[in-house]
Structures are given as C-alpha cells and as structure tokens.
Image (cartoon, rainbow, N blue to C red; front, side, top):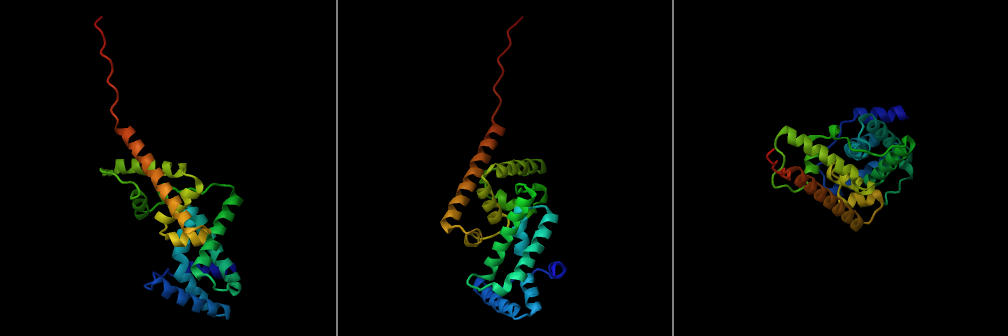
Amino acid sequence: MAHVIKDMVSSAPAMTLPLDRAGQQRDDRALVRECQSGVQRAFEDLVRRHQQRVFALVGGILRRPEDVEDVAQQVFLKAYLGIKKFDQRAAFSTWLYKIAVNECWDYLRKKKVRPLVYEADLSEEQVSRLDGIVSLTNPPEGPDQRAEAREMLQRMLDALPEQDRQLLVLKEMSGFSVQELAEILKLNVNTVKVRLFRARGKIMDSYRRRLDAAHKPLPASAPRGKE
C-alpha cells in the first residue's frame, strides 16, 4: 500500500482550488464519502487537493527536502488507512493537517533533532514574508546587505522559543491562517494570536537592536600626546 500512496503523491499534480472554504469542505466531504465506499480515485482527488498544503506544513517543520517527502507520503498513507474511521465532525483538511503535525513530531522524536529553518532552502517569497515582519525605514537593497539580513533573521528565529518559532514559520512561510493553526495544533485562537504577536515583537525588537548596533559609530580614539 505504501508504494501506491507514493505513486499518488508523486504523480498527482497539486491543485490550486478556485473554491471558497465552504465550497472546498463540501467537495471534500463528498470525496471522503466516496473513499469510505471504496472508490480509490476519490482519494487521489483528495491528494491532489491537499498535497501542496501538506508539503508546506511538513516543510515548515522539517525543511530538509528528503525528510519532507518521506513524511508527507507517510501522512497520506496514515490518512488512507484511517479514512474509514473519519467521522467528518471536523473538516477533512483539519484532520489531515493534524496527522501531518503529529507525523512531524514523531519523526523528530525518533531522530532526536530540533526542527530548524534552513535559510538556503527558503524561496524568495518565503523570505519576503519573514522580512515583512520587520518594519524598516531603509530595508537592505544590495545582495550583500540582503544576505546579511537573512543570516540575522535566521539567528533570531532560532533564538525564539520552539512553539513561538514554529507558529511564526507556519503562519508567515507556509501561509496557514490563525484559525487553521488553532485547529491543527489544538490551541485556542487567542493563544495563537498572542504567541504570534509575541514572536513578531521579539523579532522586531531584536532586529532593531542589531541594526542600531551595526550602524553605531565607533568611539573616537583619544589624541596621542607629543613625544
């Protein structure tokens, strides 16, 4: 069965749905019912619909491409094996993303590693989202300044508490809404908002302190007396 799921994930082109959230959930419910009746093609449609977001979520936690692909395939395998027991009280997407988060944490526990964001793996769009957290009068323009700002941002992300850092990455890089994060991570919506606000504030304060320190003029040396 694992190789069947792998083929589905690798061969099914990701869909960008033109539906609103309610419309997507209605269609998902219909596809889930077909899956529960034994229609395999319906699950392939669900993979197409959601694999882009699953890869984004897993990638926001693990970052290494080879790890992301393996875990994403495991996510869909778990979903396929468990879909007959899915009662649809929650949206299919919420159920699926919870599986994805749990698989990521299980993977990290087995590997005994801390999830990291590797700056070299970020797309320009993702970097822009993170850069947009910091309000600068004079943002870095040249490639050297841009590289320096990226390195600084990376250090600041790594310095955040794990939960705050993870929320910020999933919100700003992977594009999940506050409501989605609350449902996926089993947190209160206000808790998610507070943690995001706190994380953004820490990033901004740290960035400004580092920027001020970088542009602070060195003290003038005392004049030397005549010999």
